[in-house]
Each structure stands twice: as structure tokens, then as C-alpha cells.
Length: 114
Length: 112
Image (cartoon, rainbow over all chains, first blue to last red; front, side, top):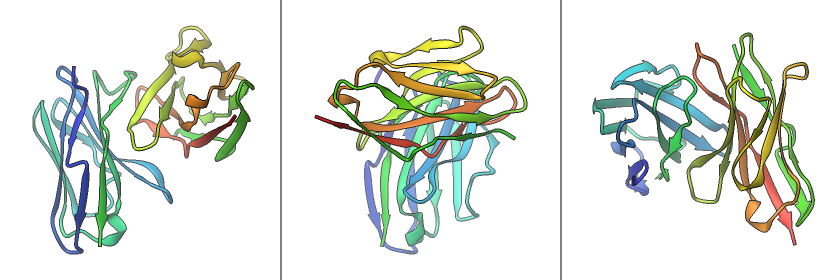
């Protein structure tokens, strides 16, 4: 299996622009997670889906952030409008289920908002 | 609510020395516990996990961790450090009722 695939790997944008991050989970995995990693705040869970349904979005920082999972093989995380403080590495992870199973992380998208 | 703390944001060991990375958790119900490793510019990958079976858990690359309920700890050890072990290590806790919580991470440096 190719593992979790994320695109783009790097994104540089200007403040106010819309940013869309993409994720393809491992085939057969039922749960998908979006994380943000910064030096100041560490690794934060933003949202997770189970069977394409958002279960917990309490980690989404504000209304500028939105996530969708239209089908079992694709998810997006959108920031609109983007701000410099959104600069971080965003990881997508998937697992067989959301309880005790191992999470498999993608390589991340490094976002820089100028 | 559950939480996890990792004592020491940065640990340095000599090559061949014992590696000990500390993790303490707080949970009102029996937890699942994980150690993940992150190499530079990569995502996290699982080292090992405890899911209420044996209290001593063996993982990849020679790492192991022991679940001690009385101490609410799940420390990660490796008898002999290798240069390739230099990375960031994250302890994580989860219950059947809640999302996974990651600790702040410990950066391990291995000195030749």
C-alpha cells in the first residue's frame, strides 16, 4: 500500500488567500484525522471522521477552517481566509477504527502564510 | 478527561547508552497507550502500543515500554542507543470514549 498520501507537500501563500489541503487515506481504513503541528502548540487534533462522518471537530480553531470527507478515499482541509498564524505542518492520518487502532500518518503539508 | 505529560523536552544520550523517555498519563478509565516516533520532515509512525494485554510491550527498533498502573506511567526504553534513534518521540493516550491525546514530545539526541 502507498500509505497516506497528502498534497501538496509544501504551500506558500499570502494572507487572505484560500488554502486547500488534500488527503487520501489508506484503503480500507474507516477513520481519518487531521492534525496541526507547531513548535508552540505541539501536535493538535483538529477534526476526525469515522466512516466519512465528522465525529469531533472541537479542535478546529475557528470558522475559517473547514474539513470535508466526500467519500472514503478523499478528504480536504480548507482555510479561508488564511492568516500568518496558520503557518504550520498539517498532518492527515488514518486508522482501521477510531478506538484502539494504530494511526498511520501522511508525510504532512508544510504551510507558510506570508 | 485524559492527559499525558512527558518529562524532559530534550534528552541526550551517548551512542550505546540506555535510552529512557518518560511518559505519565491521567485517565479515569483504562487507557490505551502509544509511543510514536517522528523523524525529521516526516509524519509520525507507531513504535508500540499498550491495549490492556501484557504490561511490557515490545516495539520496533528494539524499543519497549512498561505499563505501570500504580505509577500511571508508560516509559519508553532501549538498552543501547543508535545514531539512527535521533528523533522526536511522542507518547499518546486514548480511551474507548475519547479522542487520542498526544504529549508535547521529547527530542532525543544521540552523541557519537
